[in-house]
Length: 271
Image (cartoon, rainbow, N blue to C red; front, side):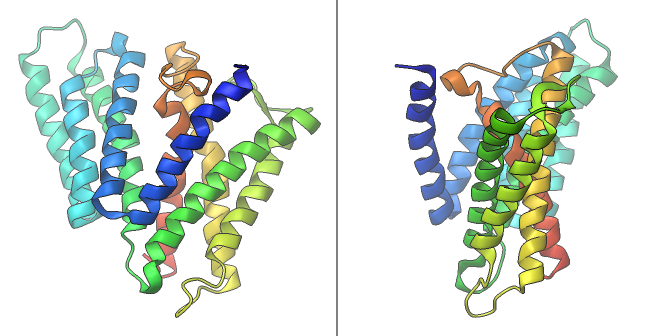
């Protein structure tokens, strides 16, 4: 099977599972977030192993944040993050490793905040109150716009890419690809949330703000992960998904897009 064929063979079933979990919401979505979050945390800890992250605290923290957000909202997610700091402090104090406590605690909490809170925001978006299952529609917009942004940034870069976007961070990304991704990502996000929910629809301006927030945050999340990988001198965070790399490579944009759209929704009283 060709490289492209293998990528499609992996992407299609995973995409179908993700969309079904978004549609169902509840504990099914939480379970998917937990599986993805724990695998991504494993990849993160492997990537940063030379900094000696406290892996047990990382796993526990990511799981606790995701569950706490679903059960009690983002405030309890922050409580779980603070609890992770306490656990990490205790583990660091009793561990015998050649690493400063400050670096060890920082790299551990960074992973939990990045992955745990990033996935927690996606859960918070799905759990957003509103008529006609507004949270489901909003999370569909996040997933659809992120996928569109990624696909069309790649297509636009391959067809028209001339100017490097951030050569020191991600040499293959181009300004033209970014613009294509922003345009089509915004269009897809706008299409999904426009005139929704049907009983109390957002305005066209609000739909555009929500869509633009997703489309802008998506490449930032991608570049953010590329920046960390370059700092750690790795190409992919893992090989679990074949040509797609690791789980963290696939969810990097979602971790930023969920947070961005949540705060825009909150600002317009839709979260």
